[in-house]
Amino acid sequence: MSKPKITRATRPLTVEVESINEHGEAESTPIAGEHPLTIYIDKREIVTLMTLGQHPEALVLGYLRNQRLVPSIEHIAAVQVDWETGSAAVTTRKAVKDLTKKMSKRTVTTGCGQGTVFGDLMAEVDSIKLRDDVRLSESGLYALLDAVRRHETIYKSAGAVHGCALAAVNGDNADILHFVEDVGRHNAVDAIAGLMWLEDIDGSDKVFYTTGRLTSEMVIKAAQMRIPFLVSRSGLTQMGHDVALRTGITMIGRAVNKHYLLFTGRERFVKPISLTAFA
Image: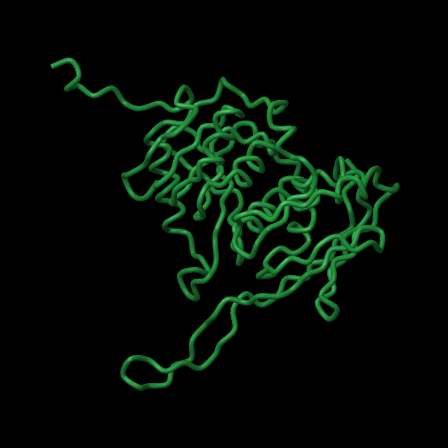
């Protein structure tokens, strides 16, 4: 696979500002960064994203992947991020087909910061096939939640961000492969999609975790990455539930500590048999 040339233009993730606490005392307080980043494909403006700037090149790649604006990473020659101009210049190896048609339909999503979905991605939902021979145990879920809880995050110091994690869960062990935070959860999931492209990571046996609610956009993006397990500490929307049923994804919400709610895809979830059931 021919990987694109990319910059490494990570921004400072937090900045210090002065605040006054409840005692009238001045404090230096970290707050999350937020920066506009306009994506251009072969000099054509596509969209402006508001981002923390943790993985800007991966964010751009993942956005193009999840919006189906480019068919594969092999089509991209370079991604160059310049924070002085707030731009991400994407150069392709050959012109993107039907770009105007794909951009003609825009849907403003429920994502934080008002994400935008191009094209009719919902029409592709029924063509997505996820593996049905993989399993997630209850103990593996608990291991994932514990790993996420112990992960050092921007949220712990500054708040105001959402986090997403890609994990490999084997039995009782959970290994976080990538953890990305951003001002919007749709940015965080796109950045992970971009990292998966860059590192050629197969999502068909992985678990995706998000701190944000499970909307239709989140379910579609996880399914597009062929990830069969979607976990959130938050709730879900009706359309998110409908899309989860259509894709057959295993969706778990309200997952905090030892509590969770299994909504769809229960055939992949393995729960220990209670001895009291045979009493």
